[in-house]
Length: 63
Image (tube, rainbow, N blue to C red; front, side, top):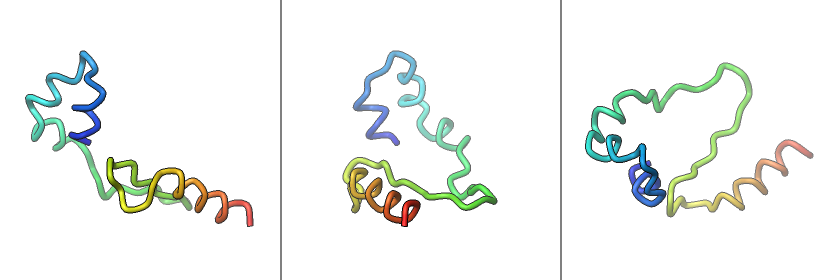
């Protein structure tokens, strides 16, 4: 997330970058919906590209 926020350079992100620990503490990264869902890894440099993840989703959903 830090890489993404740094890269997009949005005006409202300076606080997030300067207070990274406080900002990140507000996220519950292990929280998952109680219904069937898919998790997408949208980090820069993710092991599986977003395009390939989308292909996997379509293969799963539209069998």
